[in-house]
Image (tube, rainbow, N blue to C red; front, side, top):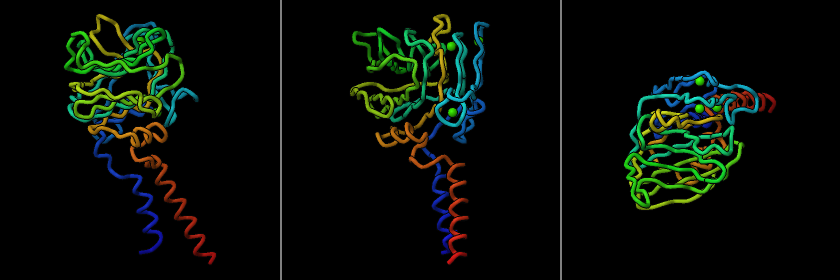
Length: 257
Ligand SMILES: [Ca+2]
Ligand SMILES: [Ca+2]
Ligand SMILES: [Ca+2]
């Protein structure tokens, strides 16, 4: 096999299918789902206190040059509901405008009182996960609070459901794993959750939302945190460019021998 063929195949491994990805919102230029599954989101920009939309301002995103900016209104992105049962992963970057905000509903199910992932600000300093089978017992079932830090910096969060265990990773590091939960979760909204009358939503920026139908292991979470990919190799476009560059260098080397 010619060296060009081998190198091209090596480069194309960066395009390996992501069978586990249900949806991926990069927010680099719009609200489309980059997974190939077509679950594009649509923005509902309610109220007039502030508008929400893509920001491409330098320094306001983590990967890809764009992120989703949510105003203090209950603006939100909606998409076809995904019922996550058994093994799943919800991964995203978030940056709060106000570290003291009591509820920053990042992602969940709109117009119910279940299924949300919310950052809770200064004084609470936790991330609350509530599943779709939440029951308000004491302690509540299908609900956990994971220790966090309230500030206005970007942080990466990954909630991993694996059978009856639920875990939170923060900035690539496991915070805690809790066993014995019904981990089912329904997601149809980014930037808000809960009944609309309660006006719970997110204020700040969210970037690179990945929803997987598999329980990410620690390595995969670390890959998402460090490279925004599942396998730790560069994004497809970068991989293709790398392939071309390697081919070019290989040709030059062969000619020079
Ligand atoms: Ca992005
Ligand atoms: Ca608005
Ligand atoms: Ca908001």
